[in-house]
Image (cartoon, rainbow, N blue to C red):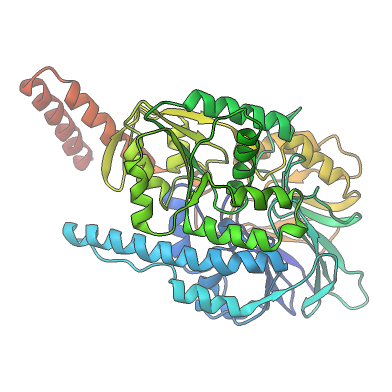
Length: 531
């Protein structure tokens, strides 16, 4: 009886986490996440699953972040009718994050369809609706850390705290796939938290494994010497530098945990007198709901009491309605806006960027990973102009990055985590990373004893795990060429070209020069059409 592992997402890219374990008796998914990043990658969210949803026996979720759970409603809508195993914290967060995701898709598709209608283009449908997401929640089955759970015929799972997010887990899986054979022991790391997390414990996990599937988001980064005190000092300096009498500090932030950590640190700095009292607007209904869940789980969190105190501060305002969000624009003194999404791909942060990017008294502070092709990454890389909702915006605001709030371990921490899992006898797969971090971590792990060489799978790769080591199975179906994964795509290049054309025409000396530029572009297009 064979055992196969399919890499259906987060392979040579950071998002879309989804792995399928398959035997003759059952098929179990680990994560079912949404793709973010370039438009080519996001389009995978709209395609059919590369498996039959009704044929999946069970789904095991590592945590509630949308790049790990965001396609769960689509899976249920497509015919999946099995259990979804997750920790209680993950189940609680999913109960707000998935409906929020559906709601955002409905709103954005509605706006897109209005533009498509004006342009004579076909209308599109959301991947799923808020109602679809609510329906999918009925399948969740909470499981505690450290307790074996039978999840499908021949499969049992045990959840270990990954230290990344409330409820986050590494999932240990034992698979029995042959008569009188010892079970194959696998560990899916999920996202591993760093050593300096404010609210989460150090990550944990079992030893003595056959295979490990290890995240690599910051596999090429070394944050040596980082601790909470140093992070707060750096945050203090960034806020001080951003302070302008009529300005604003915009912080694109993931609504769940990143926002809560930032809030605690900002309030601690204000309490200590290292920052003046500053109005802080948490402009995210999801962050408001998530914060209520964090308060309920405060007893399980490190520094949970500090979080509760920060959430109740008179300097913190949670905005719920669109009208409240827009009202922030009328403030004329320095303030801080924390809004989702963390990569500036959706949500209210885009409204605030449109309002502030063109103003030199504004600062944008990135505090988390920005995937290739996202608006956040384009701004972070120094774009002078961007397009938001079809409108061209000049970028005069300061762009700053403080990645010490990342929920991911760096390269040395990942290596240390894996060393604590040894021996790993038959295979290590590196996932959830872009090319440079993957290669860096692969090189770093080469000197670990009792480990095979780390493998970097591509999207839709399949490996047979039956023998003494992993064997890649040749297949010709691939939803996305390897060169496109984790990179900018033609949509990014096209948007950049439009901005460059506008710049060139604006810079031209007179109407004649402007006309000459337009004629040369038209001639080039005609030449291309003749080829």
